[in-house]
Amino acid sequence: MPARAIAGVAASILFVAAVGWSSDPFPEFVQQRYMGQRIVWQEEGVDATAVVLAAHNGEVSLTVNGNHQASTGAAQVYVHRSIGHLPMILHPEARDALVIGLGGGATAGAVAIHDGVDVDLVELSGSVVSGARYLDSSISYDVFSRPNVHLRVDDGRNYMLLTRRKYDVVTADVIHPIYAGSGNLYSAEYFRIIRRMLKPGAVVLQWVAGTDAEYKTIARTFLSVFPETTAWKDGTLLVGSVEPLGLRRRDFDWKLQVPGRARGVHDLGVKTFEELLALYKAGPDDLRAFVGPGPILTDDRPLVEYFLSLPRDRDVDLAPLKGDVRRIVIDDAP
Image 1 (cartoon, rainbow, N blue to C red):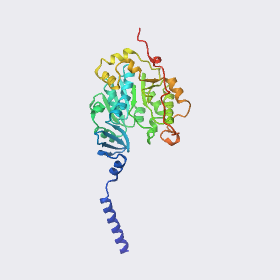
Image 2 (image 1 turned 135 degrees about the vertical axis):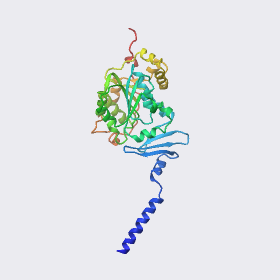
Image 3 (image 1 turned 60 degrees about the horizontal axis):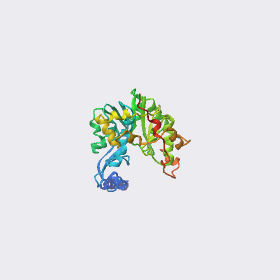
Image 4 (image 1 turned 180 degrees about the vertical axis):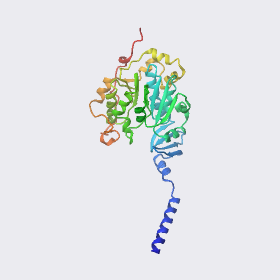
């Protein structure tokens, strides 16, 4: 017994010493996954682990549960901002908007700079909110200090199920569908929840990318709820609506006279109504023909999240996806 007791004490001392001398495995993991980048800030929250990293070129990025979420890189900022600017410009005069997911803040900030809009912003993780503050505020148009932005830490679906508000625009920061837990933000049930929250003439923007099977499954699901969906830019931005989308030159021109809305038009990269129309990719019939028949995503069958359940043999080729923008242009003549 004394020998066993002594051995146990010695083993315990050795274990405590080994733990004390060992380095923290978390920074080691981050350094292996994101080599050459420095940890600026980190937090293991209830809902997610958020880390802010700085690269040698000065770019700062935010990762969530080890996955890249946002950065100060110009190309990524433009994509995230476009998800906010485009629906605000396409809607004749959006006054109420909902943004699901904060990310780095670029999408919500892009929505918020359009004068006269009231923005509800729902982010699941408090850690993401804390981490986003370490990114340059210019990429988010100072979203945290804007009085027209109402930030709520909550589950997006739960918020929509409980609120009585209706919106002109609903959009979301980039949320990758293959990550665990993301399926319930791409399902038909999720899109139906959004649909019941829309005002007449409202638009919903959904970012879509991935393999050929992933893109078509998500787009097919979105179309099943929003039958008048149109595709924009390179085809990765889908604008859903219940009624057919119609664009008027006068609705675009008045925005150019309002400072915040004019900045949104500028930051999207367009100067004229014709340049806005040039971003049009395809209409609902074109998109429906492109995705073809097949499965849709549901809460109990999140095929994209369980991505090995779908073919992964090729990336999506959106070059064949084309439509005639004249179908959605409304004559301004009385």
